[in-house]
Length: 196
Image (cartoon, rainbow, N blue to C red; front, side, top):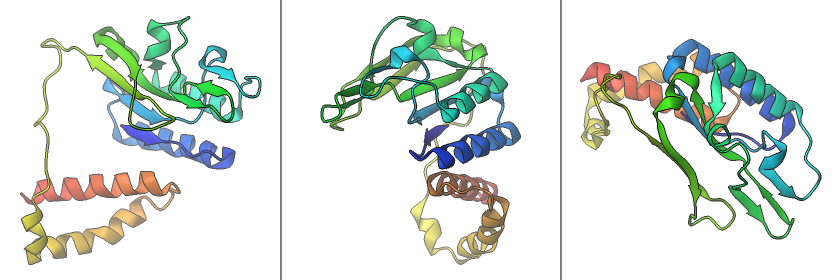
């Protein structure tokens, strides 16, 4: 799962609550990887400069969710004392780790490497996770790519037009536009696969 958390505290708390509800209802949490821009640091070591580090309600809610879902900040698990920042602001004289991977505890033994690297973004680094699986996990059907020719198919268009209001109703409690967009795409993806 890929996420991008909001910056405002109230939205962050709602985001964590919605994320927990969605993950618990629709996911096999024994093999879960959540990554993205969390917009908070989990530990004092994850911040340098700027205002002094202190825990926040959002950070605490994220840690509670991690406990509930049995997730680990894999970079910090493997590198308990290493400073490696993913965000940097020269203007604010600030460096912090706000982009990271959260993994289900059973997956942690499959991690070969986790690191941050330079990116094209001026203030954020890219983060990379290298997992190695032996024959312990069965592979899924692989990548799926949308066939644009379906947009010319009247039956397909009718199907999507009929299921779209149901999708919006299903996720009416989701307030994050980004998360809602991802959920809509997921539902359309599922409907398309069922049709084919």
